[in-house]
Length: 243
Length: 256
Ligand SMILES: Nc1ncnc2c1ncn2[C@@H]1O[C@H](COP(=O)(O)OP(=O)(O)OP(=O)(O)O)[C@@H](O)[C@H]1O
Ligand SMILES: [Mg+2]
Image (cartoon, rainbow over all chains, first blue to last red; front, top):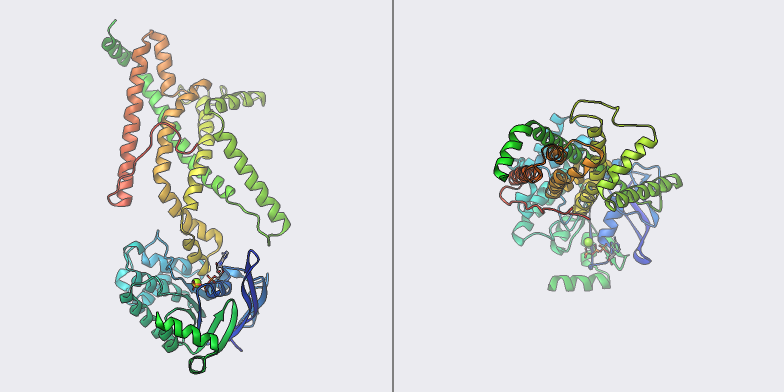
């Protein structure tokens, strides 16, 4: 059984259709890259999966359960499908360690000691254990994003959704975040990645989905998608690579 | 008669009364501001209620009622002078058969009217604090709550752990301003016989006919008090902010 099955997802804002009949599946251990022009609905799609937006219609099956049904426990589901944002969204009023501990304590009800141990483990994994007492405002962009990834890892999520995790970073810092994501991939973390970094997406992903004006234009294993692109995807690649 | 002599005479004859008045003013401003802030938080939350499309009917009604009540309270209290509110409170209580004279009678400043005054200044401050907290909440970046929600925190956990602390932190200068306004504005509570600083001066002046001296004395005390409060608030600000120093507006309410 697929870990995530999205079918016929529709979403519009003020009558303006943003997602039209989006369907795809994700297997455990997959890395799905979602590519598309600005405004094609990539963020909206991730936000629907994280339940930050409610789709107008369609289903999202997560381990066989429809997460859009009214009986679904939204908060519990969000803790299992995390999201990492372009703007980091670290809690400004807390240290790095407390950022990592908060949801573990409140949502997973872990003890203080356990939450602390797991936080430090994951901060070490992203190379920031020594920053645990720092406030987010004192970190560089790359460090902030690595903390955000560690914070998500602490929840042991089944899927991590990355929405342009490197777009707000200086070129110098892009690599450090990409390296962290590559190592997660090697560990078999299931993820969906929205990015404008075509080559990184090609290297890291097992599957590629190309969104065009809210519709799935192409969804295929990455190698195949890049070797035999649809006309629109080929055009997109040409433009993106020329930038 | 010489004003300097008058002042010296008043201070030696009525120092204990002035001191008690000062205590009254401090209690009114500290308690009024503190509890007012607490109530203001709930008022602000009430004003943020929004019935949603998917809410069941009873929730829509409850949210709408909460929103309406909080907005009305805030508008009425901020739209009328505290002096009038105090009088309405006093005579309203009397109509209901509650006479604050008989509650806690006799212990000088700390009599029933002080309790009535505390209630009035607290309820009045709550309305202003509601606005302060509301703008603080609206000033917190939306990403902060999305970050929390995306990890599975409920909306109330997100509010209390992430959003509200930041809102209050940003509102400290305005909250401090409300406190200083309360130090001065508590003087209007003399209309219902609350024994604060102005009330002490009024009685001393009528007792001795040294009007100018009495009111000069409390003017200086008020000034010292607000300057001292400003200093305290600045130190708090410096401690929180590192080096930048907050500025406080004098006189009017920061939010009308
Ligand atoms: N909350 C909202 N209210 C109204 N319109 C919205 C909202 N969120 C997104 N949109 C619109 O939906 C469309 C798709 O937006 P979305 O953010 O999903 O695009 P995207 O593919 O992530 O773009 P980008 O690459 O620039 O991040 C845009 O036209 C946007 O203006
Ligand atoms: Mg986007």
